[in-house]
Length: 143
Image (cartoon, rainbow, N blue to C red; front, side):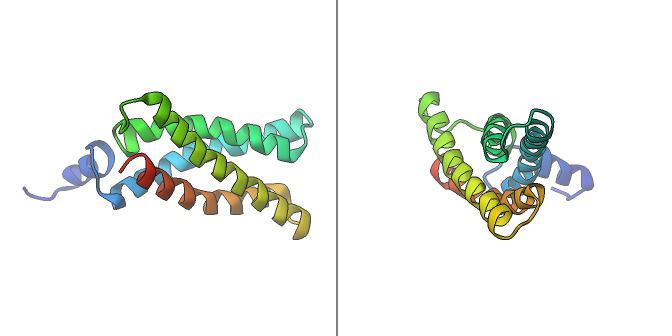
């Protein structure tokens, strides 16, 4: 088969795949979308509703987790791997809870100890937690 830009787009964006490089490429977009939901919610809840930034971060992270799950199953990994969706969502959520814990600790550390603005702390956290979430989910759920 001749490699054309159309074939490459099909492979990288549309076709079901088990290639980790393509899945990670897609996960960057999924993670970016979930991050926008998470980040936007954090800002709105904290700045407009006056909710304490760590509580806002937990709520926002949960909203991002929901977006991440839906897009991961449909586009990144293109499959449900467990027969029981309840178990699949449970494991996905457990990985997310660990990610949430990492998120909270990282935001707290950089905001309280390094005196960074909480938004900057969130950006650092998002990059680090992205790697945890992808690899943990790929090897526990979407093998």
